[in-house]
Structure formats: structure tokens, C-alpha cells
Image (cartoon, rainbow, N blue to C red; front, top):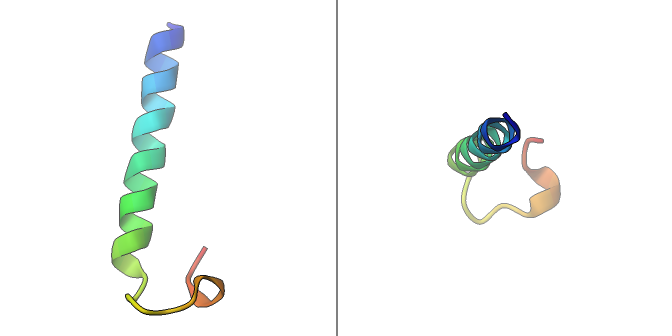
Length: 35
């Protein structure tokens, strides 16, 4: 059960990183990007 929970959190974290990367415009400073 712990493994499934860890995998679920990891998948959500990775997908959120990818979506944040695609939404933000390249070349913008970190402070101006959406959180």
C-alpha cells in the first residue's frame, strides 16, 4: 500500500512539473511564472 501511495504522489508531482513547464513561456524569470 505504501508503494502505491508513493507512486501516486510521484506521478502527480512529475505531471505537475511537465504541465507547469509547458504553460510557462520560455525565457521568463522564475518569479513571473505561474505557481
